[in-house]
Amino acid sequence: MDSADRPTPFNSALETGVRSLAILHAAFPASFDLQRLVEMDYLVVHSGDAEGPKSLHAPLPLRAGELLVRRGLIEKGLILMISRGLVQRLPGEDGFSYVAEENAAPFIASLTDEYSASLKQRAHWAVQRFSEMSNEEIRKFTHRFFARWSSQFQSAKQLGDGT
Image 1 (cartoon, rainbow, N blue to C red):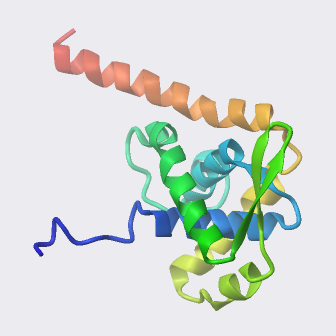
Image 2 (image 1 turned 135 degrees about the vertical axis):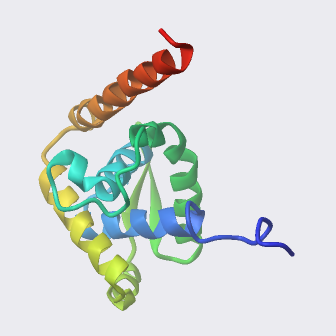
């Protein structure tokens, strides 16, 4: 198996599942729907964009475009966490929401490396900072980054076209 065929933990169900679990653990006993978790995940990873702690990941150009592809990865991550008894999916009138299970606390506590400590700190920050916002308000907040990304993309496209 060459290196291109090897599974990687980065941008995987494992990575997004652990981030979602950290968010749900920080929010416990509250539950979040998938879209809220997508928004919160972006804010945890790119907290510096939202005037929070230094971003967990490097501030790559056009990163707000991640909002477009993040949903499927997070959903796969949640399924993985559900299969391990760390997250519970709750049916509701508006669809499903997700909540941390009892086993989430000891699992999260066992993550002691520097990256995990930073992740947990940012998850707590994001939950505290945005918990009072409605789903619509948080969506508008994060979509400002998408609007900024769209204008950056248009500028890059214009430069490429020579216009």
